[in-house]
Image (cartoon, rainbow, N blue to C red; front, side):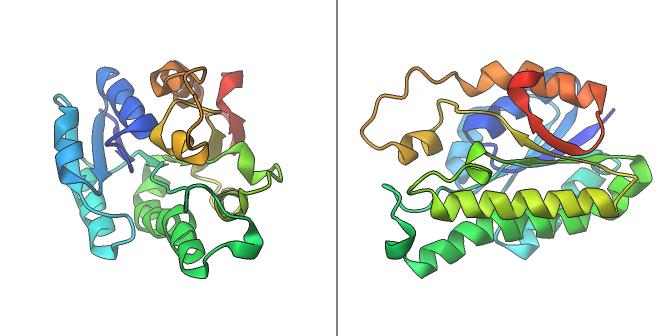
Length: 222
């Protein structure tokens, strides 16, 4: 049986992916900063929740140890992320401490967790899936913090793919989804036309089954 670590699973895409992988027979280790929200999801058998923040190094170790109890992670999904201030400020007005936090959660934490899981992923021919955004490659006004952080994550993913031939590395853009983070990006607007996160789960499952070469993935193409 295969095992995945998925960060940021109490809501949104992380929650949807967890459900999809669990139904497909995976063991899934998940996390979330809000213990009550994580418990309220009511994940079924095969899902191990670990409460904590990806910014905490001890928490990252706990995630890896939980996966090791299943024989080790075959897949790491770096999904946890934050938008930053809402409404999003222009770069000229962006609070530097908030900028640092956006990079800590969206760039540094995925790198730290990837480093911890790499030894096992190499042995098992596993994969790293970093959730990204079109804001990483498009210059949207007001998206300076989040967009540049995702751009940094994408470039780190490219280099990781070049350095780790025994591990698949994908940086996947799921498209606009009806999530709380997306609502924060458009405060006061109606985002009901965006699809639910569950709608892209079949595409992610097809991606994992096909195991294409490392690279950037637009989930809509799957």
